[in-house]
Length: 110
Image (tube, rainbow, N blue to C red; front, side):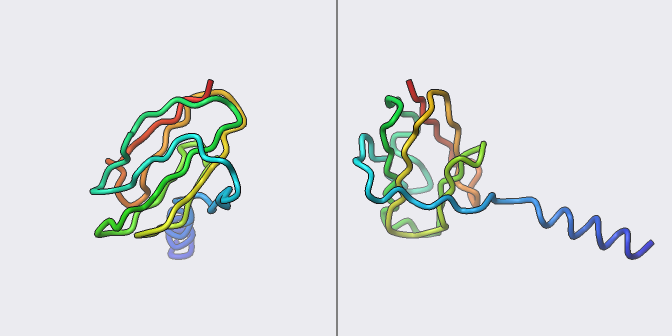
């Protein structure tokens, strides 16, 4: 019985933040989103397919990241620096900060 409880408990710990998706640092950026004061500014943007979004972490007091609900883009946790993702497909992409789930944003790709 103890073994079953341990395996269930460990399985619950395995779920969480998806693996980091490398930043597209060489991409030409169409829109920059500031990560500051526990918010994404702007929190909702619209771009064309093939364009890149750059999130700039501007000295927040705690670590933040950018995590797509579908796992298509996932940054490291950071206090400063940037993360860039090229959106190749049309659609609506919701994202959040994994440590502050109230921080939410959306990228609409036309």
